[in-house]
Image 1 (cartoon, rainbow, N blue to C red):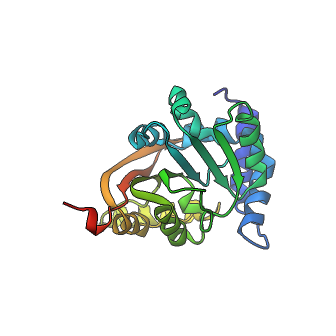
Image 2 (spheres, rainbow, N blue to C red):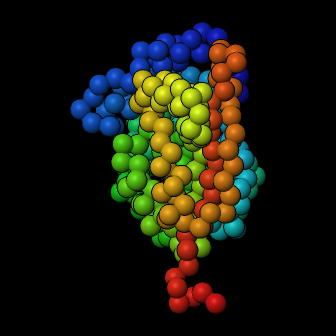
Image 3 (cartoon, rainbow, N blue to C red):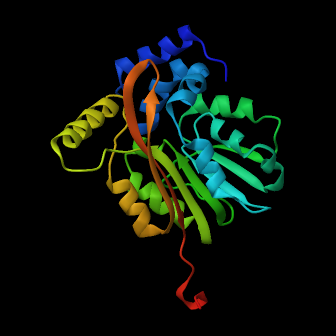
Length: 243
């Protein structure tokens, strides 16, 4: 995706100003993202690592119903590529009208993609989903536990949950404790709240298929690398179907 230094610095300026006040979560998202919606993807393509890898790990079957919660501009779904033609529907769910406008424009040509304004803690598709995924959105959801519980609830038994997001460094030495505090404060400034409990709750709700952890570089900040994870879990089958 083509980058632009002026557009990048417009985004960086919004990040430097931090998350705005608002009457509710949806209003805060709109205030924060409306000024940067058109340049959102170019900058974040370099910041948000692991998304293509997550999409590959989901491995949806033919005829799948796929739901992305916190889909933003709908950019992540492009990683399905030619596979998209094999799916029944990909539903892109988000609360922010400014980002959803970009998603609707991006996917206007593709009838299999539905763009939906809704809350991740309450939305349900018309039938149980084969795959549900969240990409760098869980850390921005105040009711993240409810969002995860809803994601698993909308899956069919044996369906797959996938999440990629930032996380806190692990370990108890002084350097790691300092790094945890640094990243916690850094991201909280922009309404992103890192929490080790996210993965723990996912593991309690699903059977872990894969957990990969790595570090990503930050645009314009050489030497700084932020931890992130890719989690894939399977919704358990009902007890009476187990052999």
